[in-house]
Amino acid sequence: MSVIKLNAGADKKLRCPKCGRPLRTIEGGAISVKNGRVDLDATLPRQACDGCGVFYRELLHSGYYHEYELPKEERQTPKAKVVATGDIPPTILKREADGKCPCPRCGERMDFVEGGAVQIVNGKPDFSNTMDHFVCAGCHSVFRKIVGTDYFQWSER
Image 1: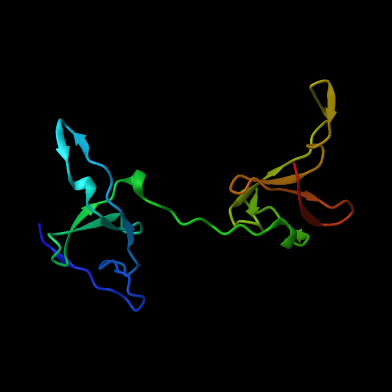
Image 2: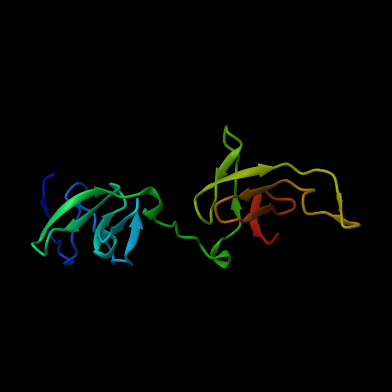
């Protein structure tokens, strides 16, 4: 196993030697038992690169690091920015070939829901699905058509 010298960028954060992104520091945790043996490696701090899926552990405070594979459950994915509902103007939304369109709020793909008949829910009529609308699985937004226009607007469920 070879050792690697990690370099710091202009912001004085360590950078991944593979992709050049800043590394995320993971503090050491508690002592754990794995396969019947005490695991002291979990107590040491690590430098993780979520893009490459690796982490680096320093070798005896020497400034040189060993490279290990980062478990999938420890990887962090960047969260997409969600636009506030008050900042979304009425927008023309068109279905593409797959029946979906991009969400103006988060950028995910929204599903088109065709209007149907009035349904009875708990003994009361439910008119929420009688008109065509788009539903986003990413930010759980609903965009309903403004009557008499081609524009859709964000709507509460």
